Image (cartoon, rainbow, N blue to C red):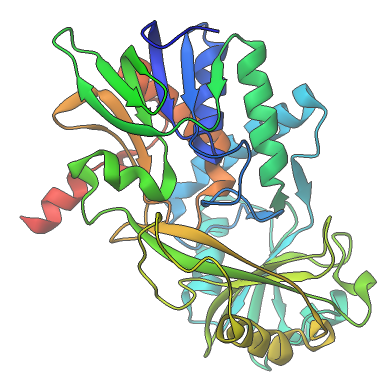
Length: 384
């Protein structure tokens, strides 16, 4: 292990979902890498926890995500094989709502454009095949058999172990205070334990990223999010083999959920839960009855057999960009600094490929992956 004052090829700030993957990709290229995490590895203070995280090939947010999700699937499978860990589980996925709404129509469009295997089901057909669902009459659902979930804690551990095996220096409980460019074109990173020099820097600090660069001011905004786990009458109806992950657009909002896995209870969340912008260093982390009530109402309406006792409530954070698309780029004034930010509540499934992209940007300043729509300059165009 190197000591403060030693020089690295790359320093990675944040060793959560994106940072752990980046550290692994860099280390496997033979680079001297330092990964710095202010909390534990893994931890529950940011955006990279929650026991299960949805992954889906059907992508209503924008068809341009499809090449990235295809690469992400390959990399998750590789990580699972290399580490012998349960990283990814295929359950199938349901994207449902009225026929003319974003969740259904956008998912259908992405499957048709990219020739992704899928089925269109009526609400009655969904319930017949997957009895845990009770979607309103007239709703349409897109079923895609490769959807499922990534196990975030296991994926972070797997990436960190891979990085360490390749020679990376990964340190938890070390808080980064600041960084600055150096005359040589590199960076100097100051922490609560020392100072490190490197040729390049990757900012993968999630909800804290905006505190490290003015370039993200107003572009990577933390938001409080709450998840709930509720115990079904018949848990077997909501297990991974019988219950696909889902996205649902209903009058109450846009919701998502997953089967029972590893802890008791069917899992549910609402996108932009209560629209609470927060400072990640100071916000209410303890869920309250209003948080629970908001989630339970949707369970009762659309998954009534899961409307049992509360098993668990947990907070996390979204970090939202203005258009809810990712930010993947180098900083305009400091090309030796790569940043991954603004994942807007739908980024974790891409962590494996985001790590590859951020490693490319840190080393080469560019990547072969299609990231034009994620560049910082798009916000300059809007303001102009």
